[in-house]
Image 1 (cartoon, rainbow, N blue to C red):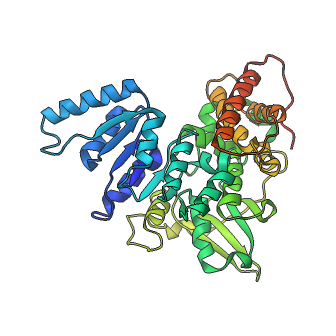
Image 2: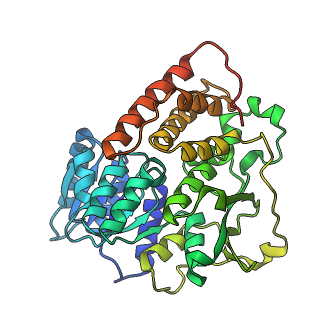
Image 3: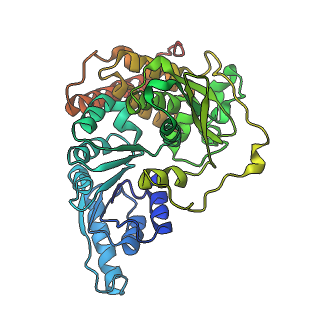
Length: 399
């Protein structure tokens, strides 16, 4: 297999899963960003044939580091991997001829063209990159259908739905129910949200994740992205995708069938479980050490989303309703707004305002190819930066 985003949270945990199943997978290619020290450790352990990093400078640093380790006998007689970099490098990793499965876990739209190329070559995709379906779900799923490619979700919510759907046909499904923890501000009054700090927003009650996804969880934009992903992954209409707050994060999502039955997938808040499911599907192999703590199941709470408190969720729904390039713009504007919040340029509540203003200003263009997605992404980032630096105060995003 090949891994896009090997030094990130999902990529690193995927390698832990591979280690726990010796002989099941061979890592032939890795793509990483700028964490040269970590990717050097991964190379030493897994001996891939091709490695890509973010920049030419990072590639030079990695080559030097590997040469030094080789002189110390770290690799024995094994040949050093080929080192490359940039967009071309990540695409080469995704399309490595010996990779039958590609884990798409690179952060941002950088992973989209590479994942699309892997689909075109008929490789099985374990998908952990939200941007692939949020920005280009229509194009990606059409390509997966054309090339008869299995696209297996790693995201815990969609992985849960995938498992539950094995119990019945699509025609028997009434609705999908995505669960949300509610994030760190589930109990915070709306009027206090403007004053919350980045440190408070990054203190997720249940999960340890990267900064952007943690802030997205605090605004519930993460759940908005998941609604868009679910629409494309499971060919489900928007009005049949529901979101409910479940603070314990033990039920990862549910499927309600037309006969009234509801199937829920339970598991610990540990990403190794959905990663292993995606890698070994349709089989189930022995656990990699993840286990549900039954003592923690003494109560399971569910709440509806408070009206008006999390406008990002409705902004995501509206972007999906309008379609075209707007979901790509939504994702790009969100990334810029979050960076501004973390940099203390804007308050927490202005994240949604920036996104709303960008969506209002974006041209309504249908998607005809990946180039449309990349152009929309760049334009939305430009508009979002304008909104961040705009001195004029604007009202909060409408719901």
